Amino acid sequence: MFSKILIANRGEIAVRIIRACRDMGITSVAVYSTADREALHTQLADEAICIGGPLAKDSYLNIRNLLGAAEASGAEAIHPGFGFLSENPDFAKACEDCGIAFIGPSSKTISLLGDKVAARQTAREAGVPVTPGSDGAVGEYREVERIAREIGFPVMLKAASGGGGKGIRKVDGPEELKNAFMEAAAEAAASFGDGRVYIEKFVADPRHIEFQVLADALGNTVHLFERECSIQRRHQKLVEEAPSSLLTPEKRAEMGAAAVAVAKQAGYRGAGTVEFLVDGQGDYYFCEMNARIQVEHPVTELVCSLDLIEQQIRIAAGEALGFAQEDLALHGHAIECRINAEDPYHNFAPRPGTVEGLHVPGGPGVRVDSAIYQGYTIPPYYDSMLSKLIVWGESREQALARMKRALAEYLFDGVITNIDLSMAIISSEAFATGNFDTNFLEKSDLLAQFSRQGEGE
Image (cartoon, rainbow, N blue to C red; front, side, top):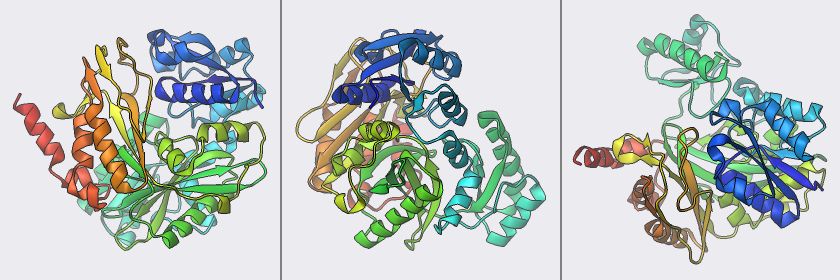
């Protein structure tokens, strides 16, 4: 087992990893930008090293500085968290070349799964269904036009690299196709340095269901059941839960086996997530595989009674999984709301600032993963997520009641958040009955209601 781990991240995920290290008796090393001198993760870690200026490119995305900090501290391993360099094959390869364990899959696997075209092919080879579309990236408009005619409109154009909703365009008819292709390619090139796109059939009103997998270096691979991630805004998840109210036990077992098949085909090691779209007929299609820990991993931890960060560390240290698929079972229901410093009343504008007052919810079944404290000034340079509010209950109904209680108790002074929107979502009839899909916010009147209230101020 490692004696010292450097955490190449910030915010709540850095705090989460520090806590896992402390539970395991491992010394933690935090890194921070000059904007994060007073951040909670720098205060909680056993050691902290400044790695550059406030811009991410000068600090959290600076591979040389991160490796220098690891060498200076004597860290044997690096945990990348999520975001930043967590799915960067160059960073993983640099760690491998320096003899530092990268807590995640190999650089080769990251590169394979980071290419969405190659990932689709991997799923095909594993016998897992993918949406109809191009076999690979399409570089010429004539080819895009031909495939669109074959599979029928509407279609989706997607960037071959990257994520976060960038380089994605829905095309409803042939008259929109050329401009959408050019825009998607340009955005992909600007965002990821890779202008390749592929085309696939649009799945109308799908559910977004993802399966957590764990795989050790010996080839043992299991799934930890599913998470429902359909509540989204512009392809960004807002609320997640486990398990999904959509799946029967039979469908859960089938999709879980498919997720394991994809992971094995990719030669996966560590914690990863296989994402699927499920259509109105119950048919599912491979979407992508994320080669890192997910933001929403706590809901899986609560229904499976496992520490996923600990499992990542143990796998990276060469340990075998301590359980098989038949040892795993779901217990209860968990829901997570992402609490962001953004203003839903004014088109979700970022709202960095100083947390002048704070009351964090508690009580039975409530967990808060956060790096926020009273008096902390939220810097404007990074993602707007402040914390994750997670609840667990014996049933979905109990979990819903606890989430409503916890959201009502979560009080910020000095910073505007999306707590009101989260409460509106989970209080809606659609969410209560499980009758929603990825277009829930667009089809409901919630966003319009918030906009109207903002205009009326």
